[in-house]
Structures are given as structure tokens and as C-alpha cells.
Image 1 (cartoon, rainbow, N blue to C red):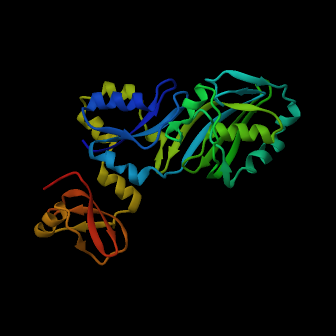
Image 2 (image 1 turned 90 degrees about the vertical axis):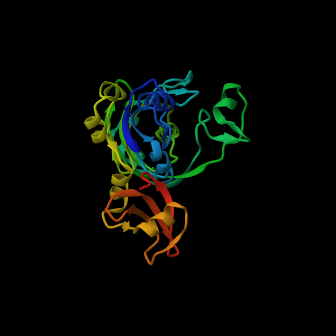
Image 3 (image 1 turned 60 degrees about the horizontal axis):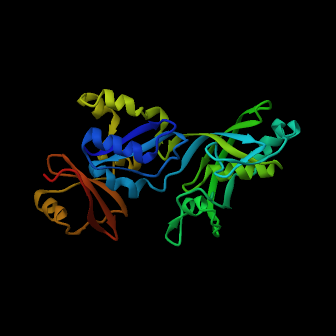
Length: 298
């Protein structure tokens, strides 16, 4: 069983929890393309079997989120799981629709963002949250991110919350974005809720809850419907035409790791045998085809 299954993660469980659960259910090697915070919900692509080798092709995918920003309160983790370290009154004039929309739109584009202290980024071999838990201050270098689009959905003046959607590059920390938005609104705030709705070409509408997978683990038809094969993924990524059929001799060489000459543009190609059976993925660079992912050795 090789490919990707899209899980709609519930609040409270870690990405590692999901990986372990599916590993136990399917008895396969399992991985993911990037973690989702325990208190966040939403889309988590899970890689299965030979699909674990797909992370290279998916790791730089853009993301889309639904976010709730709570104003007037600052926490040490920049989310709802942390301890309150500061509180302020929020004047409702700050929550004027035109003002909020203008502030949100001001974040569109490339920019440097300082990641939150409670994150898994490593400094001198240790994760930032390890320093944070010991109250050790370290220098956090800003990283370039890009906000492609950001849209206001709702303002709740009584709750002092702002709901918005954001489409952003890999590496964007929404907790930091929430704090930065609050700062531009001349107050403080934290990320109250986060729901990931899109990862690259994958949408949350295609995902399933892990409980659904448990209930249908013996249903072969259900699994085939919800596991995106390596073949189908690369059709989605590159289209139908990126396909190479190898005769028996060339296929044997290919499977043995021999690079084959092909006058085609650089990129990834689906590899088939003479009977049009999908074998795996190869890549062409400088007119040389080399083996990348093998799902069938015949």
C-alpha cells in the first residue's frame, strides 16, 4: 500500500499521534509532510509505504488556514495553550471593519517573520521550545515568508476576535502572524483557533477523520478510494503527458540504478513497462533519466 491519505486532524492530538495510529492500522511505514500543532485542526497529508519518499516533492507546498485572532491578551506560547502574560483593554474603534481589512491586507507580500519561541526550530542543536521551557533567552533569526492572500471573515466586538483566512508560503508561523497583526492594530493578541484547509494541491474537502479510517480499515474499496496512489499524485502534479514506457531491457537497467539517455525536458516522469503497468517515478536532468521511486519491480 503506497501513497497518501488525507487526514482531517482533530484538536488535541499531535501529528506524531496520527502517524503512529495509521502505522498501527495499516502495518506500513508512515510519515508526514510537516507537523500541525496539537491545538490546531485540519488537513494533514499522511505518507504511506513507498509514499514516504514523496515528502521531497511536497514539503515546499503552500498552505491555507482559517484563523481566529483574540485581541487584548498575550500568552507565552502565542496560542490558547499558553499562560497569560499580559492583558489590555481593546477599544472597539480598533475593530472597525475598514481598519481591520486594511491592516490584514498590509501583510500581503514577502516579508521577514520572527518564529515564536515555542517552536521546533533548532538553535545550536536544541529546539526553541526547549530553551523556552527553561526560560533561556536565545537569538531567533527572522525568516523570509510570503503571504499570498489574506481575507477578513468576521469581527466579534464582544469577544474581541477577528476571523480571517490566509494563504501563505511554507514556513509561515500563524502564531507569529497573529501577534504581528495585533501589534499593527496597536494592541496585543494570540492565535485562538487554527484550521488548515489546504496544503498544496490538497483540500480539506478530500480528507477523512482518523475514526473513519478505523471503521473502514478492512474495506478495500474504501481504502482505494481515499489513498492517493503515487501514480495519481504525479498525474495531478505534472499532468497526463509526463510518462515514459520502457522496454524490458531498459526497464531492467532503470531498476538497477543505471541512468538512461532521454532527450526530454528536466522534471519527474511516470515510468511504465511495455504492458503499460505503472512502475514508479524517474527524474530527467541533463537528458539523463534516473530512478527515484519504485512501487512495482515487474
